[in-house]
Length: 420
Image (tube, rainbow, N blue to C red; front, top):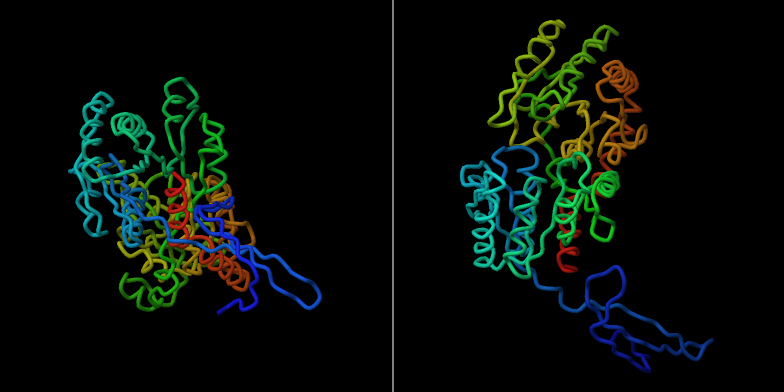
């Protein structure tokens, strides 16, 4: 019907081209042309997609923050794409309690010490076998031993380390080398981290895969109006608002931003600041009290607005005019991706994974970590030149839509899973 002049067909089934995991069929097709007797063509025609199989995440964290949310989001997204997914977590953790909200079945497993890894790995292996899980993903370095032990107990199990945090120190000693070599894949979100992993472990690019984490970009592109967001968050309607989102922690740099805001006010600009976040669950560092005292001491109490963690972060982004990531060093920075997708002018620290997300003076601005004077200068650049801010914000949103959707993340994981 489509090729009425086909004179010959050659079928080569079950053949694989490089850089693809899909089986396909090669067709050697000869077309008669007036100027040439024949012209060969090769068409790649996918056959049936590989069948999804059960996968699981193991996470021993009791906290509730970016890492834990990302794990549940990922499992929920993959389940919606037809993959049977499971969570193995502590029964007293927030993750375990909230897994059902993401449509993910949760199984209880506890490993409080390295010694308890031995008996608990046996229990975990039994759960994996009962659920038919073929690939288990873990997300924290202190879960590495548990994952390796479980692999030995569950025949045929593949294990993947999905990186969320920096790998601290050198990990090339005998024990760590042995454990890292048991990994079937190591997934990291940005090239900068991949290079650091190769420096600090025995892993090579044969095992490392770069798969950027994604977000549901539509939530941030189609966010509430600024007026609605400010009304719901009880913020002033007609003021310029700079925003920062993250747990209240010295490493997140909220204090640096407060000091920078003082410098901006001294330069005769009077923007407000929205601080969204709370202290880490089960931890009381006293930083929130310290931060509030700094706000009072710098005379900014009428301009700084504290709001708790938001289950719908797009509401907070909708209320902002500019976004700042002031962390000492982020492994990746999902909040930065959300700000880019929200179409905000973004400023981030010149460190960690942020370097791969913010291209200085193209889709945002960067400043040295901890340098409140440099941050103030970047803020004033946006405040004094709204055309520059708008241009960079447009580039930021374009980058987010092209590179950081959750569909693209899941595509990368599906390819990896099928290769394994």
